Length: 219
Image 1 (tube, rainbow, N blue to C red):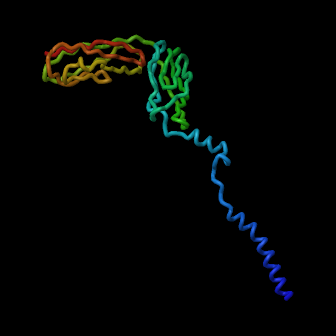
Image 2 (image 1 turned 30 degrees about the vertical axis):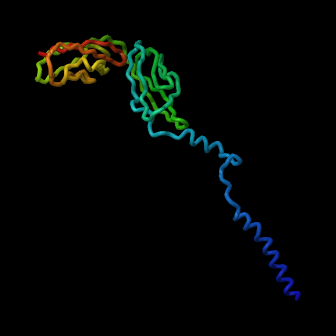
């Protein structure tokens, strides 16, 4: 009888010792909620997640003393840029537009920051500011014949060394049918009808722009 009593006593003590351990093992993991907020570092990682790239074009060409009319082109839609100064006289707005007037030729590198929601990225933007050197168009009149391929180039004379001009037709309806003017100033195509055409073209050299009329005489 005494031996049976001691066996019962030892079994009871074993149950008491094991119960707290099993309780801790079976306790469920508490999920993150309002009562158990995430640590600040968790939010920091989400806020500054980096997109692959910010800018499609990271170099802008400007002319000293000529007002800026450019806009940054980001890879993603809906990017909001951090406003601020980029170089002497030049600022960037939240929508990526550049404004101001460059003061002093040179090459400037500025760090720009853009965000889509809570995801932000930074990129280096290079601003090449050329000296203000006068320029003028080299050729504005092009004769041609109906049905014969037309070849020519507007081009410029003068301007700062190394600055490439761009040419933009501002009213394509003024072009002869079958003829085009490329962004490099090349005139090409085969005229489909005769006549005298006055084509408005904007020429820009590092942000220094002027409008001209290109004449095409097709017989």
